[in-house]
Image (spheres, one colour):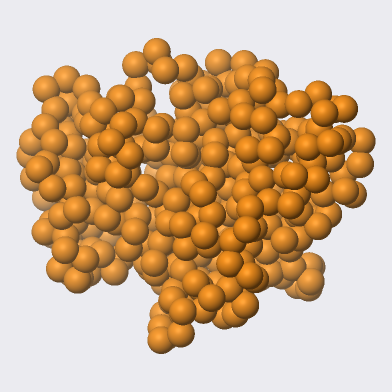
Length: 401
């Protein structure tokens, strides 16, 4: 199914001849505040998807995320976002004074990508399904992965600058690139399929290497500022808390109630990713590569939920019953599910994905610079929105192993 999406991406885009005329409008972009990035390009999975999923798998796929109550809080309709409202990417775009980043597969004209494009797809992995098949795991199906998202990006460049990629140089070096979050599904699907944890842990270096090669390719194409988010604390995900429930008190973090071993795994992925980013910085001295500490920003919610108006960060707003608001037989939007009356008081939307309230908190932690390294606010001092956010915030220490 994923292969058919590439054809849809071209629908509505101009012919090469028309693109040559349209490219001046596209590269001119919108008019955000002086010094801010005029466009954003994003890659990733369901944590970053703004609607590509529907074009890959179709509105008739039966996926609950393509119908209400998804999207009910802000958009008042399903948009293909795996939440009740906005996600981190939306808050970044809003802060930069940009419109919401359109999904690439929506098939809009080249002019409509003036402020960037989003290539993230729900369920996407960093590695291709062949990687997992070669290791005896054949449950990945024909899903989107980072190489496919990069293929779509190169197709867009070909249409924006037909026959002359050098013509996109100014656009590339003035744009902000978000590479992730990605990699979570490389672990989530095998975890839920009961693949031995030791084997899943062995995937991490390959996942990080794929993220690294994607960053390198974007830099080769002209990217100058890239944000690379780490993984969230998956031990705090309600679905995992239900599936991997333990009778041993020592399996849980005393301050949060999250699963200790799963959060340790998230930190392991993030540690390898940070080390790889340090290597890339040395190789590309003229490029800014920012590590976004999603883990640390999210842990603020689990450690001090009351500061964010959250009642219980470990309970899903939409889903089934039980301690964590999730059920083995019911999911949000499917079956006899229930929806909370006030999603703003919940950190988890559907037991797997954060609520808009949680996404807002994570985004603000990143945009203020307290959970980015180097601080995104400090390297964009000419952008008044970010400078104002970061003016009174001290950087927080990155979570270590």
